[in-house]
Amino acid sequence: MLLVDDDAKVADSLGRALTDAGFEVVCCADGVSALTQLDVGVFDVVVLDLGLPDMSGFEVLAAARPQRVIVLSARPELDARLQAFREGAVDYVQKPFWAEELIARLRLHDPSPGDLVVSATDASLAGRRLALTGAELAVLRALVERPGRALRREQLADLALGDPTLSPRTVDSHVAHLRRKLGPDAGRVATVWGIGYAYRPGGEEGPA
Image 1 (cartoon, rainbow, N blue to C red):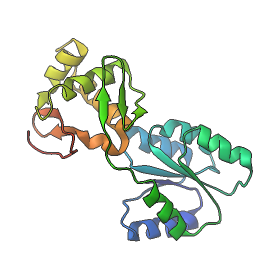
Image 2 (image 1 turned 180 degrees about the vertical axis):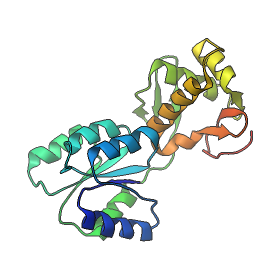
Image 3 (image 1 turned 180 degrees about the horizontal axis):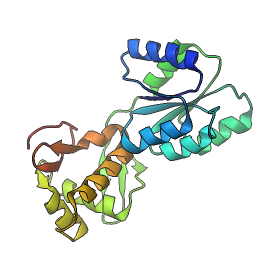
Image 4 (image 1 turned 90 degrees about the vertical axis):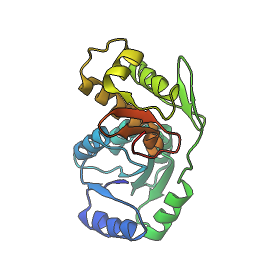
């Protein structure tokens, strides 16, 4: 989980409560740090305060898609709530709040793995369309069409992107962005250490 809140006391106490409840928590105190974490990591859920010191929490919310976001805010007005939901938030918790209530809401929104459907033009997971680039969709299709089979990076570059001479880092970059967009199901695109990547519906890592 990514917890974004510039109030050190709130972040500390809530972080401890969430850790005690079994969550693994990464904390950020500003929007820039949050965007950096979202760019390099995959989170099951983001708990986001709207009142950040360097930018609007709504900017972070827009960038967090398609990961699940629960908004924390002292703003009681309906407009703020509606905007949060329009930007993709799954819940809105007004400050002050009880940590126990937030944890209960997190449990409520905890998803089970859904069906992944991939076509020539798009992909959806549990009925939700994934906002993939053409390259990301091609990489996903190449893996899904060969379930359980480990593909080397140069194989993926050839099969998905039509150029086996592409840098392995280019393939890694596409896979990293694809995993971020898969959210809690990122483990479906598994790393096969020393080889490359494989599609595994169960989400487990390891040798193919």
